Image (cartoon, rainbow, N blue to C red; front, side, top):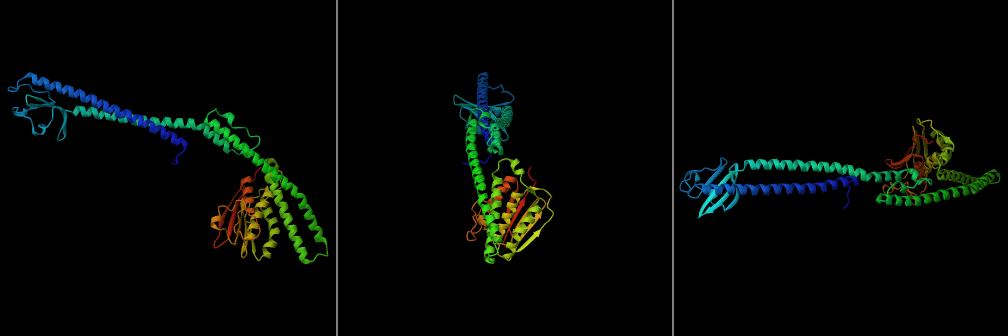
Amino acid sequence: MEFKQSLAQRIIIAFALMSALVAGAFAMGIVATVHLVEEKLISAGLGGDLQRLLLMDSVSDWSHRPEPDQLFYFSGGPGDFELPKDLRHLEPGFHEVFREQLSYHAMVEVVDGRRYVLLQDQSDFEERERVLFAVVLVGFVLSLALAVFLGWILARKVMAPVVRLARQVRHRDQLLGLAPPLAPDYAADEVGELAVAFDATLGRLRQALTRERLFTSDVSHELRTPLMVLASSCELLLENPGIDQRGRAQVERIARACEEMRELVQTFLMLARAQHEDASMSPQQTVSQVADGLLNLWREPIESKGLTLDFERGSPANQGYNATLLHAVMGNLLRNALHYTETGFIRLTLRGTGFVVEDSGVGIPEEKREAMFEPFVRGSEKRGEGLGLGLSLVQRICESQGWTVSLTTMEPNGCRFEVELGKPRA
């Protein structure tokens, strides 16, 4: 059975239920005990009154009357002492008799074949019972309220170290190599064992992140040299007057790919840095400056495909952002739009603290929309040779910089990517 309440709520509920069970058992025991004792006392007292009446006078000349709240009857008695029909079936002993709105305690005695019945009004007894029930009920409610209050205090005390541990684990600095261990802050109890487990898990996670960071940094660094060789070779080939037009187009295509790879390598190097100080040393550009540079880069391939490139400058804020990372995010979204659009338009719109990239392409299937920012996920497996890493890289950059990227579909077809940059990081 799965509980949807929080652990603190479950502690309060368990405490309240336990208290309700104990208090309810005590209340029922008190009521039953008092009722039994009072019944025994009334039975003994009423039986004694009946015996005294029988000893005072003879049946033939009855002159003693019972107490004001009592009624006395016997078989064959004169006048008011005649035994009524509703009492003739009662067996000897103690009974409760109800007459219209009134109720009585009755004691029945049989002597020499004659039946004697003494009734006593139990209004006082019922009033005492009502007071007793009210006191018990109020006590039960108060004990339940006190149990809930004490359970709330207990839950806060019990959950305090767990909540503290959860906040420490969620803290981003716990993934840093110099983050202090969690276990020394807690006692050697269940929470302490949980802290030890978290320390071990976070340690393995930090090692994995370090290995990934070193791998990304090393690979990106080593790729710089061959990319520089390729770029230099392309420049030399383009200066050769003997190259034909078709060959020149191919070399220019290689040169553009080298430039894209160089930017991608620079982006990976930026993401591999763990210190914010390193990232702040990168060039800063506004959204408008990055957009102008990318439009000059992408206008020719977009228009050569027969598409319309729309640009709405809007009124973006004059704030500087990490040029390399912002260039990678906007460039990947434009590249993705070009890759999946055959006819229509690609639109770049700048806003106050962000931008929007829209296209009239094939769109993204609904079943893949949630996973489009995962690595190796593509909108259509039969289009091009892409690996599906562009949007994943966009998501990683946005997460590292505190930016947000969202995807919506357009009617009748196409995609709309909105990036919110917020305030630039220091």
